[in-house]
Image 1 (cartoon, helix red, strand yellow):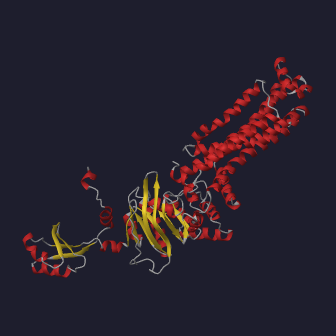
Image 2: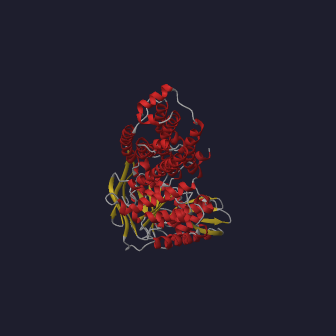
Length: 332
Length: 262
């Protein structure tokens, strides 16, 4: 499965931005099992790409392949023009990685943790000091720089780990489940940190199964399950789902027989009675709202509210993944 | 291998070791005991003499000790046992540091960010191995030097000659480092499969069994190893360590760490 797609999203980088990351037919097998296969993808500089998929879908494997942590079984990938297979050290020097867990040295201070990595990346003493101070201040950790990382909250640890991933000014930043297992407050802090990076024009690959996070932060979303199922911007994904719905709240819901005029409106595909009103599904290309409102008013209905039902990323997710959990089963 | 990367790893490893009080106490306390014990033992033995049969057995292996008085012979025999104890430091200290270091990183999941940096796994392995090996060897050497200085005061010139004879020098300066290397290798191999440092130390502790065996053999007086014996054993231990090191390097592969270490 492949899904090369770099159409210009509503936000994010201009389409002419250079390609920061490219992979063609990328795959990795463990024994007889393919963790991920046939990944074709381009990410432009300044773009935020979300990798969305269930546990075991191959998100972490994809991140590890693209960061030259593991070798591909087939296909190629380049970061900043460097091949992950032939030039892994160059690739690793150009990427920053936030792994699934912060992986800090708990007995070392925040600044000692960063200093160790800055040295590994070969930063000069002056540059090290400047970068460490910059990121500790950016993420609000400067006052705690001498405290050992083991005393930090989960959110602070995650921010320190993000700072670690950025010290060497990487071309592409990979964030693997940055808010997993965090409480809402810590997750908010981390999302805010990612938003800061996004505003700074960083190229980011965000692996997550948090749909809301992907929706808010990503220019494009890649759906992963053993390969890339689809890649597109959230807006285009919504538009392409092929249906739109108007929700009309009424003072009193008319009898079913009096809704024929609404059903007759060009573009309307269905009308169903819902609690306190109607739900009108329509062809997404047809602007049905004015005609539906006119038909209802002509039928004597008192309209309290009309709104376009926003298709959630969850709907899109289940549509693309081809599964929807059984709610009754889940409650049982 | 880049020296700057190696030094960066060594620096961090030692910073963490110095902050780990439990580990630090296991490194520092035994050398002090091993220095004090022989001196104390010498005091306890005092002017006692060995049974004639045992004395004859010892002199058969160490004819150069025939110039000693019966009391000096007893002291020399007792002190000789402690040479093997000086091998225990390079055996257990690197094992403790290596297992704490590797399993600690496994538990904290801190290896993946390191491996994501432009570092070669051989540099990481070398850094961890050296950081574990050096304190063990240093502890052995420093303790030996302190022991030699104290021995010169307590035992007198004859017994001072015993603790500085070629068998001691070969044991401390050749067999000690070889045992240290084997200990590091054991630490690396066991740590790749185990998730608790204490369990790793218990398993890796089998490395001490041959040393204890050496203690027992020497204590009977049946075999008192001379310099040749120590050099030979050092060679064998070194060869076994190098084979183990080759296995350790394979276990320390980037992909193996990320995908197989649990």
